[in-house]
Length: 483
Image (tube, rainbow, N blue to C red):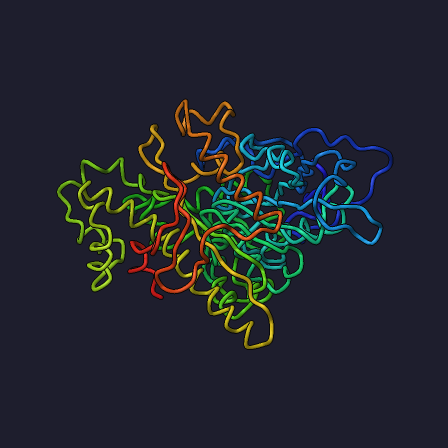
């Protein structure tokens, strides 16, 4: 609950974050701070509680006693004090929900391994990412940047080394990692990156402006700064929900995600986010930062499970055409995913949504990194490598490696009380040990112990019932990746 910015209320509502003012005396920082999320929208399977209050722009810092930092094997600064590597975590939730207060984001598990952990709170939904005339765009992104600047300026007081900062996140948090990686203004604030199931938004200004106009129409207000400030925080959230509600008869769910993408998130405003993320990465931005990127095998594969009965009579090709997948890529993708076809049209559509939203973008991200490395090398810079992985362990609860299932393994919190509901009563501790250890090793500066993601048929580490390196690990998504 340590504030990195002033509370975004009153004159600071819908404004760029202002650095937090200093306080007198000793401040207790033993509880989670207020969260931008209000209530529990149930967007993901991760338990993410909301904490009331106005000072929502804060960080949770988990650290061993700073006096223990001298026992670490890290470099020393000019004063001779050792610094521990730092992991900065960005939570997911589709840019509209989520909370750093989740028990699954327990940084003490990384403290055990000599890593300082910082969990970041940032503005969500229309508050953080909505387009408002007269207000800065990408306020949530500005929150990320100010939090990273706070880490740079303050983490040494917690035993951390500001020269060894790894940014990491899952889903929208993974999207935040890639967005920051491709942002010129963010360079130098971090030195390594780990993106789990990254969900990129790359919202166009036109779409962002259209949503603002719709919210204004529904609320009877102007979609500018004065108009939005004239209504309460709760009213804006209500208008956001109404504006994003699919009209009667619309496809909804995974189909909308395929057709239109995420409605809220970082906007390609031409300034702070100067270009689409992967285009920026392909131009060489962030090329010097080592990157690990991965997905779960089944992500949103259950998106159409509720429609399984009604889809039995619909051909796979017709259903995919309705989602916008046409020849010749449709036949190529179906051939690469023949096993899914054995389970019916609903399973095929779920696999396609997972590939479209997560797995094909990963293939494009790897290709963008290769292009960016070439640009960097041409300009005399030393590009860093990229590694890929797949989390393939199937939960006995869902029978699948669904979206978010990897998080309690990554943080090594399988004993947390909410985990059995999604991973069963005896999830494999050995798998958590291995994934967590690989993250720790990466944060501490080691390269992953599997081949880099290079070339069209790149390999990836497979975290499943067994742990192995798999060649051409994303072959099933490549037909729709467009690279």
